[in-house]
Amino acid sequence: MSKRGASLAASRFPVALPGPPRPFLPFTPAVDLFPRARWAELVSRHARRSDASRFRDMDARGYRPLREAVAEHLGVYRGVRCNADRVLILPGVHQALDLVARLLLDAGDTTWMEDPGYFGARRVLEAAGAALVPVPVDASGLDVAWALRQAPHARLAYVTPAHHAPSGATLSLDRRMKLLDWADKEGSWIFEDDYDSEFRYEGRPLPALQGIDPQDVVLHAGTLSKSMFPGLRLAYLVVPDALLDPFAAAISTLHRYVPLLPQASTADFIACGDLGRHLRRMRVAYAERRHALVSTLASEIGDRLEVTGAMCGMQVLARLPPGRGDRAICRRAYEQRLEILPLSKFAMRPLRRGGLVLGFAAVTPARTRAAVARLREILDRPEPPGEQHAARPSPASR
Image (cartoon, rainbow, N blue to C red; front, side, top):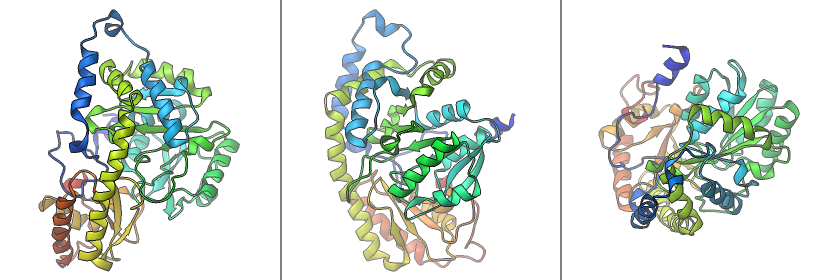
C-alpha cells in the first residue's frame, strides 16, 4: 500500500455496524428522540416526485435549497457570514477536512493541531502528509502564543473554538483575534470544526470564529448528523470567496455530489422550522441527561474525578488522579458494557493526567445513573502493576 493508504487503513473508527448505544458513548446524539414520523413524511414526499430534474446529475456544490437553508440557519444560530453560494454540501466533516488538505496542503506542510485534539481530524491530516505541530490546550482553548513561537509559518490550523474536543474549553476572544491576525499575516488558513456548537447549557455562546473573520481566512465546517441523526451523513463547509471555484471543481472530480433525496428532505426539515424545534427540545433533554451524569458523578465518585467541559456539547471530560491509567479503566468499562473514550487517545504527546470522555446524550438519565455506579466499582478496583500507563487502546477506543 501507499503511505497514505497505510495511514488511512489504520482507522480508529468501527468498520462494522455498531450496536445500540451504551452508557457514556460520547459525541452521539439521542436518536430515540428524533421526530422520525415527520422525517418519514418529508422523505416520502420527495420520493414520490417524478419530475425529470430529480433523475439527472445535480450541482456538485449541493442542492441549492439546502444550501440556502443552511446559510440562513448558520446566520441565526452561529453568526456565520455567508450566503448559499459559499456553502458546500458534503457527506461529513472528515470529507470537508480531506478536501481542504488536498487543495491547500502539500506534503510536509506544517499544520497546527490541538493537543489533545480530535483524533479523527488528526488521522485525516496525517494521511494527507501534513507535518502536525501539537499545540497545547488550556482553559482558554488553543495556546496561540505557544504556536506562534514554535511554528509561526504554519500553512493551516485545525481548531474547535466553540467547544474544544475533548476538554470542552472555549477559545477566548483574545486568542481568536490573535489566531485570525496570524492567518492573515502569514497567508495561512484556519479550519474551524464547529461540532456540538448548538448545544449549550450555561452562558451565552461566542459566535463562530468565521463570523468575526474580516480577512476571509476561515473555512467553517459543521455537521447535520449530530443535530439530527448520525445515519443522515450530511455536513457543510463554508469557504472563502477566493476558494469557491477550485473547491467546487474538486468536488465534481472527487465526489461528484451527495445523493439528492436526503438533501431535499433536510432542506424542508430546516426551512419548515422542524430543525429549530428539534434543537430546542434537544437542549432541554440533553440538559436533563447532562445533569444526571454530572450530579451522579459528584455524589457517587466525588473528588476522585475532576469534571470539565459540562457547559455545552454531548459529553464531559473527567480527569483522573495522577498515575491512573485511562486506557486500562476504559478496557474494564468496555467489559462492563460501558463505552468510554480515554483522554490519551486524543493526545499526541504524553499526558500529565489521564481522563475519561463520558457522553450523556445517547442514553436516558436512568441508564446513566446506573452506569455511574458501575464506573465507581471499576475505579475502586486497584490497578494491576504495569497498567498505570497502559498504551494499548480498549475495544471501545479503536
